[in-house]
Length: 248
Image (cartoon, rainbow, N blue to C red):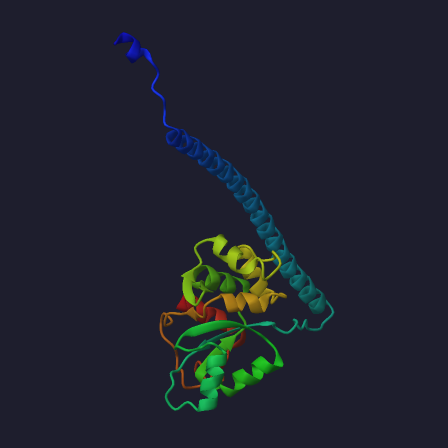
């Protein structure tokens, strides 16, 4: 009886295989986790570098503008800034009394609800469309702070027809990295591309869901009148920034 108890118990082959498989999976998992950690660290450094480069670019641009204005004042002339390239367009009124042609333009602009807003490139085709629906929209030239606030505070992505909040750079990278050849992988890339109206502007605006804005704090003045008549509709140029602040 003592001899029998001293004999080693044979472990079934299936259990050994299972153990081996589990160990293999665990080591693979650990290797993948290490690789992912290294990749994430590299990406973070890259994003910081890009953000710093953008800040420098914006500052240089501002300093250049100040220098040009001073030089013009010294020469007794005026500095005429270059034409704006970016527009923020927002719908003000509903569908009542709207012609079918205007309704179609609103669909093309993706302004399907009241207080919906989109970024657009300034060109002849865009301006022709906006002029036709002038009484139903308001638009202007957003500055860097406005673009950044809109993307960070109200930014939603359109992924497989769904409205997804921009909570992570990975969402942007997965959707835009391949389309833009690695140019856009984070929020700051997206803001920079929209603000400077870069080569991948179209991909960025298509990726963003139209902004859903609040009613402005303090209300509108009169949405049926044009901005130049003391109302709200039409082109309000740089004064759009103040209104967007009140609507975020």
